[in-house]
Image 1 (cartoon, rainbow, N blue to C red):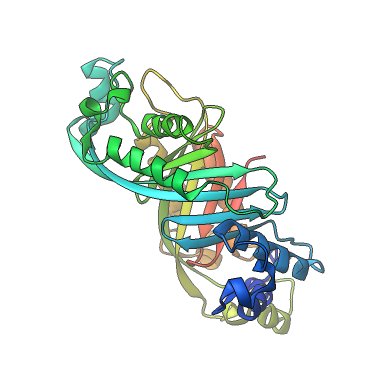
Image 2: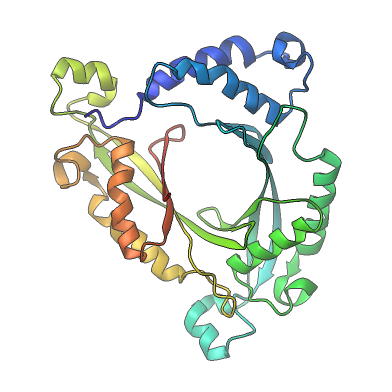
Amino acid sequence: MTGMLINISEIKERAGKILRERFDHKFLNEDNRSFRDAPPTTENIARQLYTDVAPLFSDTEAKLCACHLTESPEQSATYYSTGVCEANYWFEFSAARKTMSPHLSAEENARLFGESVSTHGHNYHTRLTFRLERFDGKGVLVRYDAIDACLRALRGELDHRYLNEEVIGLKDRPITTESLAGYIYERVNTMLPLHRVRLHERHDFFAEAWEGNAIFLGLQVPFYAAHRLHAAALSDAKNARLYGKCNNARGHGHRYLTETTIGGQYEARSGILYDFVAFRKAIEESLEPWRDRHLDLETEDFRDAPSTGENIVRALWPKIDNRLNQLLVRLRLWETANNRFTLRRT
């Protein structure tokens, strides 16, 4: 009826109280008793935040499933309700390349990759994710000296290189974002046990390589739209109480950001998972009816359901999935920088 798992303001209020009282502007080693005997590493802080906040939602149907903690642009951690913990490390490198496969003819490469077969460059942004299935709160998942040596080795091999000719390990491989993500995964695994890597060729386009040889592609596409949070089955007073200022009768607007991630069969000969142009076209076509529209008044998708983030991402899933041959594995929607909604194929 409400279209929400839980009111976002309720999350902010409950979690914010813990943050203010126990973490914000504190010397964690001494001011927070949880770190008297355990170092306040990024992983430990994420675990403790989850431990402190999760019980506050025991009276709701929606339960806390994860706590994401960013320590810096280069380091973050996630602790899950299952006890799984992940540590993320980001690094950058700049490199030139021709997007092509040595296993294809010149004509095939030109047809598949278009102007990208010409020499060009990227500022690559890469995330390495290490995972422990049961984290007991003892320190870090990866030693600092080990991850430092790993990142130094990767930068030394890839930074300011012409990937097609100057990286020995890439000599007989397709030079695509998918292939490069897989190569980085393989290289890191010779030094440290890695769970997955995400490689951003651009800020809005990435490939992921996971353990088990799984490859994924992701693309972020924004759209602008207005909406009003209002449930027709509720009284005006209940709507105002439930949705607050978002129930304003004249509505309000957002720059929504979608992130579509697909899986499927990676083709080793060409080095691609899915044609990029077709991938982008499927998303753009799915979003077009909503662009610069009032979602409640000018589309059919929200005539009978409030246009909450949860309902928007649910309505968008089949539109994109049907255009991508049911390859969609995850769909994310940012309403604001702080509000993200996610659907996954299970």
